[in-house]
Image (cartoon, rainbow, N blue to C red; front, side, top):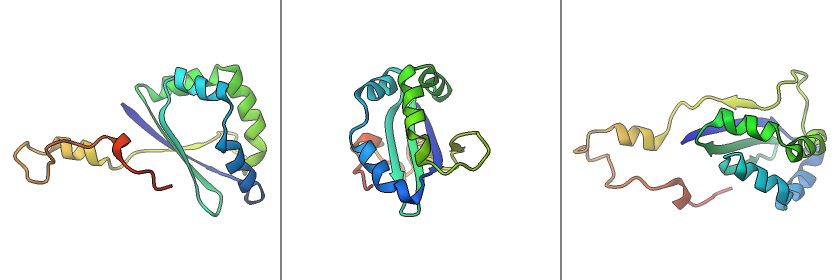
Amino acid sequence: MQRACFLLRVRPERMDEYRERHAAVWPDMLRALTRSGWTNYSLFLAPDGLLVGYFESEDVDAAIAAMGETDVNTRWQADMAPFFVDDGSGTGPTFLPSVFHLEQQLDALPTDDPARPYTTPSASGLEDNA
């Protein structure tokens, strides 16, 4: 499973409406994300408008490309564009490279290392603190 994290910036005056729009995302959009291979998709919004997105997929590039080909994504992106601060680059979200992953490093430890747990908890078993 591959992981992806990206950043955007929501306009401060649109943050309440942005939250409202995401309280009930269009069902067609939810289905398209699922069909395109997006899993464990979450958005986190800081008080200053920094938006952090995270998702997992068997193939992140293919999942992004598959969403890009859907009509519902085209409509959603057009509808949501006014919510974002445009940095003028026209490149969309900034994807961040991973520099640390706990489970990956735990799995690399020798099996007799006391720091290695008997089982690695799944991400779905963690509490969402957002």
